Structure formats: C-alpha cells, structure tokens
Image (cartoon, rainbow, N blue to C red; front, side):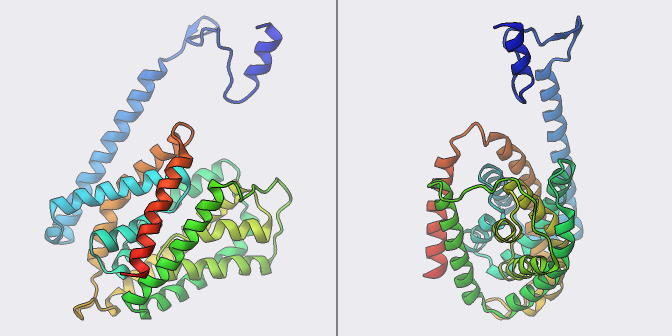
Length: 331
C-alpha cells in the first residue's frame, strides 16, 4: 500500500491503515481499547444493578409489590431484554412485542398490557430523541407542526381505547400486527425503497396529516407510534429514513408522556373479565420491571445489527407475529 493509498482509506469513516500500529500516535501510547470497553461495560452493569435494586425497593416497599412474585419479576426482565434486543436489531417498537406477550403469555388484560407499554415508551423515547438531536437528524421545523396534533390525537385514541371491550381490542391489535407483518415482509423482499436526501415538505397541513393519525393510533393501540410515524413522514414530507426515525422519537417525547398520563388516570374505568376495575399500580409494576432491561437490550441490539444475520432474525420475528396475530384474531 502506498502513502497515497493509506491517506485515502484513512479519510473514509470506519477505515484505517491496516499495517500501522494504532497503539501509538506520535510516540505516545494510546489507552488499551479493550480495557476501556471492559471498564464501560462494568460501569453499565453496576448502574443496571443499582437501578434494579431501586426498583425492587420501590415495587415492594412503596407500591405494595407483594402481588408480583419473584418468578414474574424474572420473566418481566427477560421480556424487556428480548423486546429491546429485537427492537434494536430490526427497528421494531417494543409495544409490538410486549403487548402480545403480556396478553397471551402472562394472561394480562390487553388494556393493562397497553397501559404498561405506554409507560415504558416514556423512558425509551427521551434518550433516543436526544441522540438523534445530537446527530443533527431532528427536523424541528416539521416537529413543531406535528406535536400539537399528535397530543390531541393520542388523548382521543386513549379514550376510544377505554370504551372498546378487551375482546374487541384484541381483534384491533391483531389487525395491527398483520400490518406490521406485511411491512416486515416488504423489507425482507426489498420492496421498501429509501428516500433520497431532499428538501423536506413542511407545512401546518402536513403536520396535521401526520400528527393526528399517529397520535390517535398510538393512543388506540397503546404503542409509541413509530411504525405509523416513519412511513407517514416519509410519504407526506419526503424525509429520509434517519430523519423520519428522529421525528418519530421527538414526537414520542411529547405524546408518550401525555398518553401514559391519560391512560393511567382513566384505567380504573375499565373492568376486567371478572368485573373488577383495572389497577394502575399493576400496570406500573410491570412497566418498571420491563424498561431497564429493554433499554439494555436495545443498546446491545443496535450494536449487533451489522454482526448478526438480521434478515433471518426478521423472518423468525414475522413467524412469531403471525402466531400472535392468529391467537388475537381467533382465540
């Protein structure tokens, strides 16, 4: 390799000269990257353990967590990690995984599962939006038009959700899963094409056309709404995928807080199969045990995207969603 070749590869992100000793720069030794990585991982593990200990104290000391067994806590932690890992790998919102799992596997009322999901979105949306903002992908000019309609939409969606019986809500969510299945099949077959960089189309009307259905759909289904926001912003405002994802995260910072608050305050108006009002504390208990490992899983999944065979994982995920959709539509 010539000196010119070395210079050209070092200018490309992710490329560096392969024969140069990167352990020294100008005779000065660089820190061992493996030790730095181990140190960061240990610190992250310590923070996670501290968070889990705090949650255990909060759940059992303040929120009367005797109703949550240790086995159920372990299952919720595993669910959170799995949902976050899949979300990080293939870009799927956690609600698509946690709501069917809590409803079909844990046997929870779907309204309770949706309330738990909406409380989790709050913690996931904020760091994601901050990261996109730091990377310069956030189109705040468009976001300011979308947010007001999104907030109104999610409040309306939550109230409609509350009056739909659990049986009917399972059917609605099953139909939504079919939409997610079709979208992932299109990604597997390469039918969804990326938008090229262009000047986004921004107006009050486009903000209403995006924010209103996104907010209503998020409130009705109990999800963050990214699966609705991203394609709508790409279609109506001609945003690239990274910018559409950034808009989705920014919108959720506002809609998720309002939606979760409205859902928590009105959850008691919904009756379970035995005619008893649903308890908001039960939804909060599930949420606080799912979100820590969901964040860890999402962090790991995002870094494994270029290592694991994502298309195979997406294919397996589609099969799992087909089973969940069938069980919800035809219990």
